[in-house]
Length: 120
Image (cartoon, rainbow, N blue to C red; front, side, top):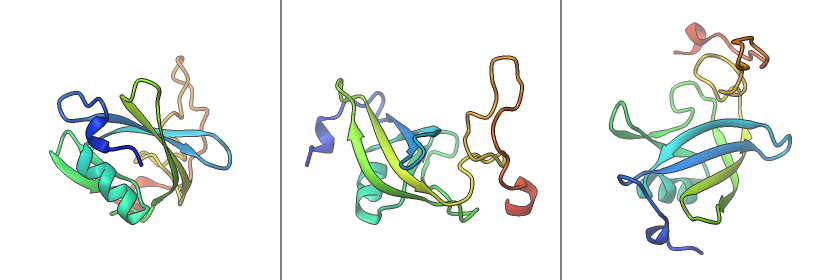
């Protein structure tokens, strides 16, 4: 296994891209620190570093919309990781399956799968 200490972190963080393993849809992008990576590997559930709250968070901890990690890949520059997941519910806190639910014109093109006020 690759030593997480050899990854290229910026200010202690690395970009984590989350993709649905089956459909290949990109679900979200979030920051991870070494602890988040280690916790993700240890539990099989995606963990990230919240820059706004300055703490580790388990994706789906509040909503129940977990990301079950099936594989982790490291990019060629070793400065980002790709999590291939089985998504439970929606990935986006706005209620969409993917955080990438709008196009450049602002048109909603993604699928809404839950109402945030029912979850948070």
